Structures are given as structure tokens and as C-alpha cells.
Length: 362
Image (tube, rainbow, N blue to C red; front, side):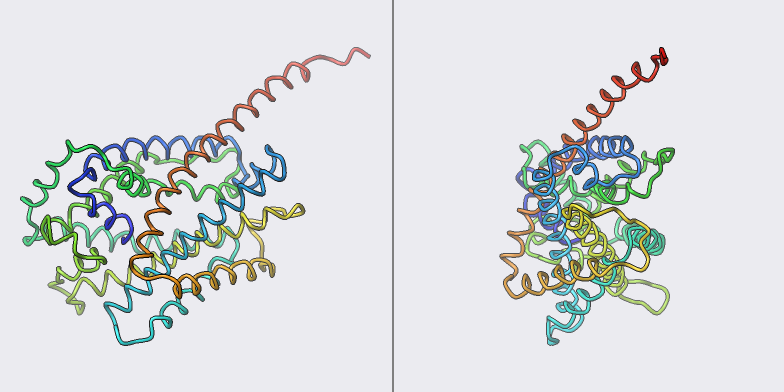
């Protein structure tokens, strides 16, 4: 809600539109390929696969890189959430109060078992999805939406794509990366159905998150907002019920989605860190959770506070863009590694099959 739209809108005249088109094709193909490759390793997370097919030193290094990427994602979202809440709810309140509350909630949530994380995400998505779709449809059919501004911006599709905008747009399709941990919960006979939803929903959300703010604020003024979707939500009103400003409903949804994102990313980072220990074993249904979960998640919370002390708006946007770029390369590296491991596994099965078929001559 902050990083992707803001980055795309900063490049709206110099390559964002064409980058979105390329990202839709690339993101869909990458999501389908990632899902397919993880299905070749049922019951194993990415850290387990790395440990099984790579030397220990290299697998530990890759696990630490993965932990850093996932941990930083949660840190950025928690920091952005606390800043947004302070700006739109109570600018005079201590900014570290919201940050501390969100951090504590993220630490507690991320320290739960993988099965608990999965159930929590399903519940939050079922609650939030109808409200999100309602807000987006209300924005699309709003009488204050200027379609001429949208058509003018769409006309820049012939400009060469921006790489940073491409990285931001492709992040919308990166939800399949949660299989890095959730794949431990999938048995060998499990099949992920309804994958056709991925390109439809992701394309819809990507186009709406980019073009709707332009339609409300204009082709030029939209680039002046940092919290562009919060301002856009505040441009709409509800004609029914006791909630008059859409902003209140939007910030409520933003709270739930930020908590879900932080819970998921820090939990994934925690599992990568735990996999670095030579005696670690995956426990997706662990209950009660071990002390290692609490300590590692607490470290992520401390890093969030430290980042907030160091960061400001300019530094935060710089880190956001670099993280989006790094995320694209880590996704490609994951696909390449999984492709190599799947090929080695298939070749090993072919070699062992004839040997198993030879009868005992004794």
C-alpha cells in the first residue's frame, strides 16, 4: 500500500506503465514456476531443501541472506505502518508508541508455529478481502475519478520500462514466496488449485493501486504525496452506516494487513535462522513453541526499533527501493536453485529405478 504505489507513481512518466505490463507477464510466469517447483519437494521448506542439496557452509550463507531479506521486509512495513498511523490519527503522539505496540504484536505472532501462522492468515484474509474489494470498487466507480488523467498516464506505455518500477510491480506477484515455509505443511498428494486467480487478482490490484490515485489527484499532484493511498482513501466518503470517512476503514484494514505481513515475514526469517543450526528440525505444528522462537523474534523487534531511530522519510524510501530490487534477484536465485535441485532429484530417481528393478540372483 505504500512502497509499490509510491515507487510506480514516481516513474509514471518514464517507464512505469510499460514496466507494469512486463511485470504482469513475468510475475505470473514466476508465480506458476515457483509453485510448480515447490510441489516437487512436498513437506520441505526452502531451508530444508538447501540443507539437503548444498554444502553446509553455502546453505547457511543462503539461509542468512534469506533471513535478512524477509526480516527487513517486516521491519519496513512495521515502520511504515507506525508512521502512517501517527500522521493520520494523532500527529502529536509519541511516534514510538505505535511502533512499539505493532512490534510487540509482530513478535508474538511471528513466534507461533507455522500451522498457526497459516490459520491466522486465512482468517485475516477472509475478513479483509471483502472490505478491500469494496473500497477498490467504490474508488473505481467514484464520480470524482478523472478518467482523462488515467488515459493520459496510460499513454506513456510506449516509454521504455523503468527497472525500479518493474521491481515494484513484480512484488505484487510475490505471494508464492510464502511457500518457502508453508510448503512444509503440504503433503505429497496435495495440489494447489485455483492458480488462475493469481494473474487475475494481482493484475487487478496492481492496475488499481497505480491508476486510481492518478484519477483522484491528477497526473502531476499525485507525485507530491508520500502516503498516497491513505490520502486517496480520505478522498472518498461512505453514504451509509456510522463510518463517514473511508480513511478510517482503510487504516483499520491497513493495521490487519500490516500485522499479517510482519507476522509472516518475521516467522519465515526466524525459520531460516533456526535452519542454520546443524541439529535443527522443522516443526510446523510445534506447540508450545520453543524459547528460540521468542528470542529470534525479539531480535527482529529490536532491529525494528533501531531502524526507526536511524531512519527518516528519505532514508526509508531509499531502503525500500533497494529492497524491492534485491527481492527480484533473490526470487530468481530461488527459482534457479529449485530448478537445479528438481533436476538432480529426477535424475537420481531415474538412476535408482533400474537398480531396484533387478531381482536378487541369490
